[in-house]
Figure 1 (cartoon, rainbow, N blue to C red):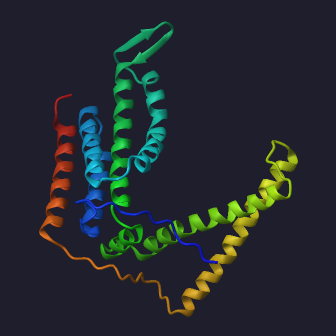
Figure 2 (cartoon, one colour):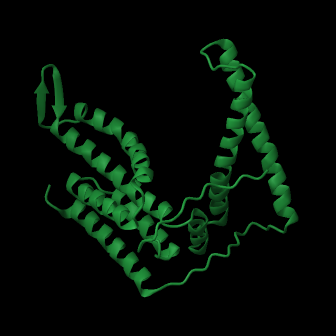
Figure 3 (spheres, rainbow, N blue to C red):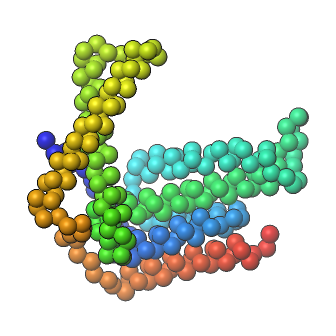
Length: 253
């Protein structure tokens, strides 16, 4: 049986009505600009802007919070390491030396990560993902990359369901995951079986696509129409990003 990809409802909001091509281009510019920031004040403003866009998108908090937490965890090592490794003025906590510059740099990394995460969630949460991929194709992103991303998204869920079914079958037969040689060997066999089944399924899908005349181009029924609001949204987000980068580079230290 073919399993459907997970599509969540898109809340009605001004960002949901934003043309996917202009939204993708604007978010790409904003992410690149935020990643280029060095100092804490511009990074904090970028985070505030990203959270503001999340609020404007009306995305449910129970969907946003755990995903933002992933970005926070990714930045956590910098926040823990930089205060103890960078030079400059420092506080002494007994035998431990905490660098003021390291704390500020770690907080800047955390703010940048959360700002980029907010922009990413705005992009994927305000439009169906297949529409975003179609927009990428219209923006002349290489077709191979678009198709690989689309198939990877589709088959992540499919292989996950396959693995869950095999784990259920193993538990029904009395298997319990333990830190023993037998447990590791069984888990290795399960993982290998999932990969082999995935490769076989990929071959069958490739044959089916060729039988239907697939020639390497992404065809979609998604309709795009540019309005003045779409262009204004792109200009506003791009200009704000450029202003942050200029402030970061030329502003007072």
